[in-house]
Each structure stands twice: as structure tokens, then as C-alpha cells.
Length: 364
Image (cartoon, rainbow, N blue to C red; front, side, top):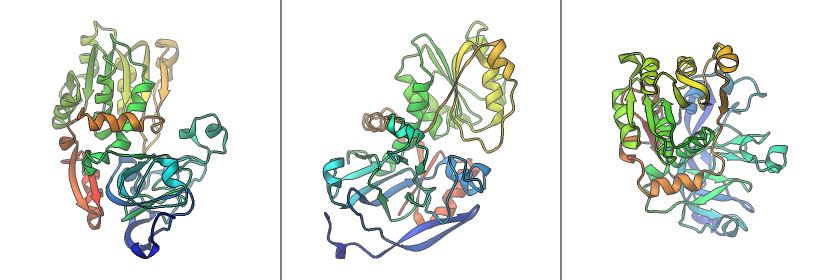
């Protein structure tokens, strides 16, 4: 193994989730990597909207192990992170092209490499679905150290990227995949609903596709201003007018070509169905806390829409790293809060309120 055991501490601080609203800061053993595994000292880790839905008890995370995203307590949350490689199990350095001292990141899902989806290269839909921060095999990064299992998908991150910016690689990669699912064409009008971290990433990724215009929707004028700096041509606040009519007016009454839903609000789903054109493409990205009811006749008989889901970020991490490295996003306006791990509850509360934060990070 590529480390001296005596140089690593025996215990670390870690947040442990026991159930909805029951998250505790505890002392936990520091893992020792085995063959093919990587141990990383966490430099910065993010709080995601899905972390908040889990914390607040959304049904998809608790009580039903048949659901894809169910949580296995006790577990350490955190699937957005960057860290320094401090130990390498046998063969891991060669496999991942990593060395001690490198900054490294790991895709949020650790594929089993055995199920039908993994065997077909569709690893992001892995039947086992071990995602960091939710499962017993993949404890997350709200801790001082995190272990990348042997089947993880790991990448070196340039040290030129500030660590609190590198945390955004994971959500940006998810945003890129959602944009790819939209199959954006050069003359398209693209509407992105929601200008949180993921929606902002979608705006930046959509800009690279060269559409005729990008319209950002959000209830916050401040976030709409950031969206413009990410590449949006127009910002619309639905509380200040009829957003559907404004999009219809922009498109000679036809509606937008592509609508990407990133708000997590059922209202935004119906809104999208009303403002999208016939034969348009609707991308549903959000993790919804509650069930959504809409008129499916619009999807079929009325508009014959293409409805695409979007899950995780397959093959998108290298693109996300490059976008951040090239300065294509106003990262200092996206990462708004940096807190020590001991203030994790404050960070959770900041994200829940949504009043002043965009992306909140914890720094162990």
C-alpha cells in the first residue's frame, strides 16, 4: 500500500445521518484503503438540494428500499466534494493515474460492474445504485476523510481550480447531462426553469450548444442576474408577470423548443408543458419531494412531446472540470457560503431558507 499507516489519524470528525432531521457530528474511524481503493482527505464538500430533501424526510429517501435513492442509516452524507489523496491501496495509483498529494474527485455513483446496466456501459443507472452519502458501502464527504471504493470512477483535478470551486464539478456534470438530454439545436429557444446551482450549470452548458436564445426562469432576481452572467439571454421572474405568455411572445406564439425543469416544484412542470411548442423536448431533472399531477393529454395528443428524464452525470466529469478550469462560470457568485464542518446545521438551514445562498460548502 502507498502509505505509512502510522501517519494517518485513527479517528475523524464526521456528520452521521440517523434519520430525518437527526444528523450528528461524531468521531468515526478513518478508513484504511485496500487494493484498488483511494483515501482522500476532504478539503471541501457541498450541500445539495437532494441532501436537503433527505434531511427533511422526503419519502423517496426513507422507508422504501425498492426506491433508487433510499438512504441506509447510519451513513455520512455528501456526494459533492474535492480532496487530497493521502493513501492509495495496491494498484489504485496506476488504475486512476493518481499520486499522493493530488487533488481528486469521484463520480457520485459507484457502479457494481455486474448488473445489466453496468455491463452495457450504462453505469449511472446501476441496479445496486450505491451513491456517496446515502449507502453503507459509500459513506459520503461530510467528514475529514472519504474512501473511494475499488469500483469508483475517479479523476485528478487541476490544483489551479480552487477547492471550493472544484466542489461544483459534481452538480455541473449533472447539469451537462441534462443539457445533452435536451438535444439542443442552433436555432432553438431553450428555457431553463430554476437558477439554483444546477440550473446555473445548465445555462452555462446550454450556451456551449449555440442556441438562438436561452431563457432563465427563477423567483429570485438576484439569481436571474447570475444566470445572465452564466450565459442566459433573458431572465423571467414568474412572480412579476405571465411567464408562459412571455415565452410565447418571444417565439411568435409557438413556444420554446426545449424546456429543462430544475426547480423541484410541481408548478414548474405544468408551466413547462404550457410554454413548450408542439414536438418540443421536455427534460425533467429535479428530484420531486411530492408527486406531480399534470394533464398527460398535452404530452401525447395535443403536442406529441419528447419527454426525457435526466439522472446523474455519465461521462460528463471531464467536461465539467474543463469548463470550470476555463472560467466559463462566475464561480465566486455561485459558491456563496463556506462554512466549517462543525457548522453543518447552519449550512443545512441556509440551503433550506434559500434567501441568501446559492451553493453552500463545508470545509472539514
